[in-house]
Length: 586
Image (cartoon, rainbow, N blue to C red; front, side, top):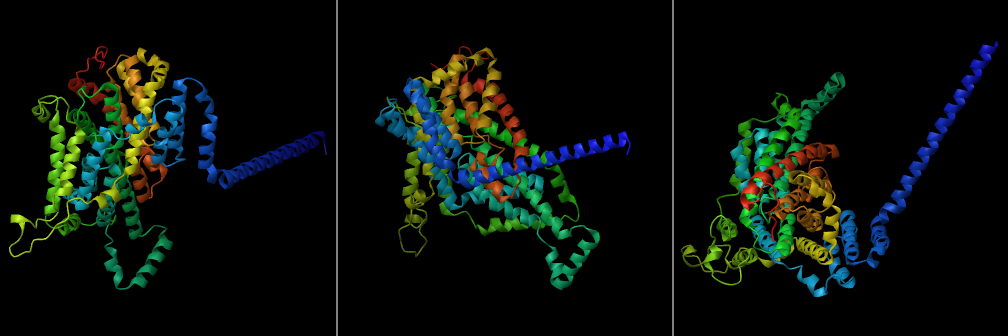
């Protein structure tokens, strides 16, 4: 062999050795990673909550040896980590201020406990109890089916119908309750859209038909019509469910009782600035309802664009979609099965309407309200109205078998009330009351200790930016954080800090605090963001990408709509000046 040949062989052997070593190292690295993953899954993951509960207080312990601000910061950080990791149930974490604040000399026990029953909690209690009456009477299902019939049977318009129902009901009923009610209706309607009409054709000779289908599949490599129909049905169901969840989240911000974050805002805002600020049930709705309506409409358009291919496939002749008249007839049959509107439903509807009218007309700001008729020193709050109507619901009978309402010849008998305490006790989300109370405790402790002022001073550089830029930054930041934690918890933590930022930047507190509260409810990307997201994610057997793709654009849409409404309608309602410099609430 010549010299050139020997050199070539030597280089070939060396390169082979280097390649072998490289493969060996890759295998070792992969084996190490696999063993680490196995170790984590076997020993660390099952004990993660215990580790968080034990290690977090110890790692944050140096904070308690500093000033009051650091001690308050210790409590807030500890509760935030517990909320984010779900190391403890949310309600249990919300009770920690009763233990920590007195021990760390921030607030007394009586001061902390008093924060857990404020007027906002009573307003929430009254609204939810009456909403439970709506659910018990099945009135919400009647409304849902009636609206769906109105929108027709085209899948695109049906989606808008579902979104309208979801948003409208979420103004008054909990988002998760509305979503849970609509999911089976969505499933039933989509199943009716793609009813398997081929069963009739297959009935006479099912074995032969099955054999034929197998042959067809083997010979052509293409799925049967039935398989394609099921595939299209699943693709259509996903955007329907996402739409229901998004509309519920948007509707939950339309009123002060729609979800926990607006109620947390109301309690914190009144605690900081008093009750004479121009904020009322009516003025909140003047901002919240337009935001919900416009964003819901834009969400519908965006979902039409994102899932355009799936909706387009329903127009094919072999998609398995039923005749539109058959679909409408099926939905109408479901509505007919409910029968005529009962006395029970009418009574609940009357009380719910009465509650809304009394709340809105109590102090509408643009005109004198009925509260002005009572010339007295102490003001009548929304909590008084809520409890008065709730008490009526426990007094009025659910059946008209008394006095002139009794049928001829029918014996007089006692009738159960519209609401029974056993039902309320079983269905009421008691943990939310504790969550609200924990938020108010955090807010009060941050104010008393000076923590919120300290944090606002660190963020004082925001004062150099234009007000609209500050608004956008705060909304984007809040909207990102709320994807991984409870909306109410995030509102409770951020709102006291935002209030101090507005004072440093010389802005009206409503200018930032209201949009931040809305953004706390705009969790569109992850299933863990809200219970509604989790429910539809599971019901639709979705992939993570389905919700993330839709949610990323939804966040941008919702923030820009919100900020635009605040700059226009908000300025008109709350009298915010363009410069915002002289409009701080004293």
